[in-house]
Length: 190
Ligand code: PAN
Ligand code: ZN
Image (tube, rainbow, N blue to C red):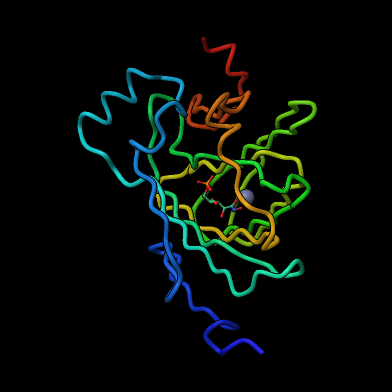
């Protein structure tokens, strides 16, 4: 049996940290190439290198049936018309699905099917769950004005593949139009 502190973890969604769990921080400089408006990106970077998000990973076991979860905290803000976002990834084991639960704030998830490229923008809100199927790249955006916090639960064996997205980015972008998030083809903005 796991120890009590492995069975129960207290997390602080306000900071995106979990007692005893390693936290990864991503700053604006870590998201080079992610945003469409490169001039706005460089201008924002020149003014500082803000923290965009922090995610704490809780990994109690490594067996094939085990689960891991991440507590995420994504800051509000925009680069040009694009909301602050996570890098986004596929799971290394492509068939691994994930369940996201919104805790606070307002966000959207961008989902992209690997085989067809079909893209969806789905809300990530408190008291709602978002099912991310396998074979689907996923990225989170904060579309509100306060930090967005959420939990993502995934198989311990899922792994994270950032390479494919780093190379070609998502097909679509989520941008603010008249105060609301809309999904557009990246090509339509070029
Ligand atoms: C999440 C993500 C978290 C940060 O826990 O890892 O939102 O996003 P990136 O990993 O894309 O930087 C998850 O989807 N885990 O599988
Ligand atoms: Zn994931």
